[in-house]
Amino acid sequence: MRRILVSGGGTGGHIYPALSIARAVKKRYPDVEIAYIGTENGLESKIVPKQGDIRFYTVEIQGFKRSLSLENLNTIRKFLSAVKKSKQYIKEFQPDVVVGTGGYVCGPAVYAAHQLGIPTLIHEQNVVIGLTIKFLSRYADVVAYSLEESGKYLQNAKRAVYTGNPRATEVIEANPELGRRSLGIYDPRPIVLFVGGSRGAKAINEAVLQMVPYMKQTPQVQFVYVTGEIHYEQIRSQIPLHEVPNLDVRPFIYNMPDVLASTYLVVSRAGASTLAEITALGLPSILIPSPYVTNNHQEANARWMEEQGAAKMIRESELSGKYLWDWIYYLLQRSDEHEKMSEAARRLGRPEAAEVLVDELERIARKA
Ligand SMILES: CC(=O)N[C@H]1[C@@H](OP(=O)(O)OP(=O)(O)OC[C@H]2O[C@@H](n3ccc(=O)[nH]c3=O)[C@H](O)[C@@H]2O)O[C@H](CO)[C@@H](O)[C@@H]1O
Image (tube, rainbow, N blue to C red; front, side, top):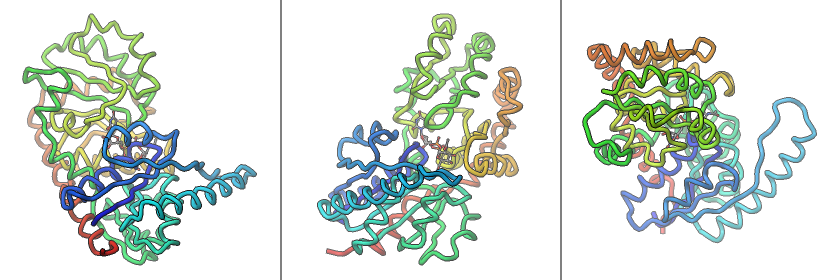
């Protein structure tokens, strides 16, 4: 493969799988060139340019309102002009294959590729198929999915393949030592990581604030708390950090695979990419699903993990600092329970995902 174009965005859950696929292709084809279609406002505009070797193109796009609304006419107009722009990019870059990993932005990118006769693969991370992937599944040459249950929704696809999520492969190749060092931790203390998805979560932030006194009394553990960019300044001003030296507060972590690989316990939202990562690593977790997502799909994700013994789920409605702390403390004390959770999580992981995806791309890509 000489050139691959990927697209996905809005949140990390769509961006990182796109990058993982591109990285996995690069591992097999070191000379491959990579381009990305994203938006200027999505998180991808911060993450992708940091990669250094990826050409970043942008289009403008907005989501559909679920109710009948005039604004949807505007959405269609933007979609059509994004298709036109994507076609220009594709003609300029000449990719052998185009990959979409969800989020509205990949709609025009993959659709344009299809119209130009370029082979396409799309990837779904969640059990329930997202709007854009559903739309594209009629056109894509391959629909790859992360969780076995999704297969039943994809019966009309040309080819639907259960691959897993490519982030799983990336995390098992990560370096825990680098992770610890990047956090400035040079001793073997266990790390408890709090992360509210790629954009942060207000409810988790509040619970963490309530737990500060407990953390202070637990200096044998290092706590790392990722607030999400928009919440960072406010949270920092609320915590007397000099009094809690074992608590590190950060707006975002750009080397999450290394950090996760060095973590003992994670407290997190239940986004699909995060779950793919923690299962591949066999990392015990306390999951607080976001109730603000389509079809409450994060709760379905978290319940699935809990039923398998791989995680503890706490609904946002029952969340409090004290309740969360009791669970954290329990898992810190009971290494046997921690171990059981870890094994159960690992059983759900699919660390070969990226390789399977590259095999699929090889099958469809234009040959020189
Ligand atoms: C609110 C919302 O719509 N959430 C959706 C979004 O979530 P969101 O993007 O939050 O969730 P995911 O858990 O799927 O992905 C987050 C990704 O960002 C990474 N990360 C996160 C924080 C950080 O500081 N650094 C970092 O690198 C994680 O390691 C992971 O790779 O996409 C997911 C995948 O389609 C869905 O399941 C979620 O429901």
